[in-house]
Length: 158
Length: 158
DNA sequence: ATTTAATTTGAATTTTATTCTTATAGATAC
DNA sequence: GTATCTATAAGAATAAAATTCAAATTAAAT
Image 1 (cartoon, rainbow over the protein chains, first blue to last red):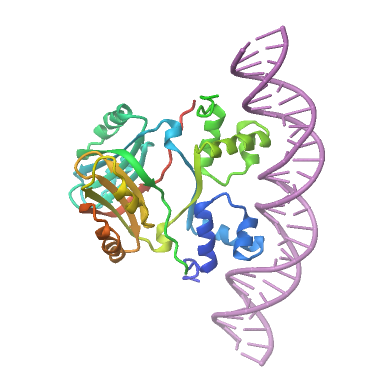
Image 2 (image 1 turned 90 degrees about the vertical axis):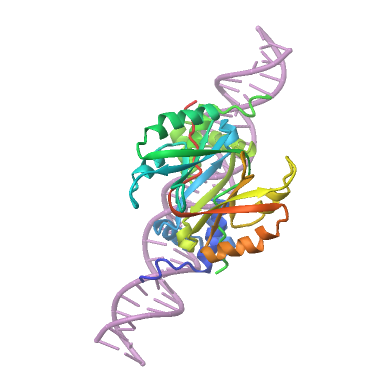
């Protein structure tokens, strides 16, 4: 009971594998694939959602279609006590910020930002970053070309 | 004609906004939201898929549920002529590699890798990276904690 | 203005989702 | 051993949704 809430069996993993690649697959199709009744599959999927194993269903939208062609990583140093998350809260609140990681080493945070162009990136730095008082310095790396970009996990067989 | 294939109107953007946040929303619900007949919405969604505006529908799976708790960024220098994409092809082929970016500046590539633990990260470096001949050096940054992580785009009103 | 093309609608049909009852299997307690 | 509790799955029934398609509307182009 304490454990079963976290343990994923072969069927769960199979469902996850299917939905990770196609979140709009029908329950009926999943059922056919895993060899179960649709009602049983529904039960499992709901449990996976409830347990937050599945966090969200998202449509991956081509950034170029929205003319968002600028991608940058910003390494940020901040002067705040360890465990303090003041800076990250500010960073995470910026809509164009897709990722905020607390990293080991000199640069405290690594932030991924997607915007239209260099001008809009500068805007974000001016309007947001420069107003976060704990930030000491930033080092921006511009992405010239993205070869691969996905959140897909490697799901084991069992 | 040449343009209409790329132009997204207010309704398209509204659909994208809905599906980005919940890819399993029903056609009927989208129709209700945007004030159209379900069949018309279906038409648009199919066109968005076909035009690759919507690239994929994915279930975002909690990495912790699969015990994949190691996240790292690897900055990679390679000695290959400009425009050569030999190295990136090798990097992108690694399943645990979620992102490969060609970046401006000294470090040619920035790679995001997700694994179980430090041991499995080392395995990838040993089994894959060290066997790519064009790689000169790597600098690995370990993520201690992820505060925000999403691919969500900021979708304009119109 | 008139033709052409592209979208949208609405009705009809097929397919799914969903609910609920029943059945099965495993675990635990008595 | 039997009973009981729990979890899971199946199957049937119903509600809802997806999908198709002809007709109508709208927009675009000449």
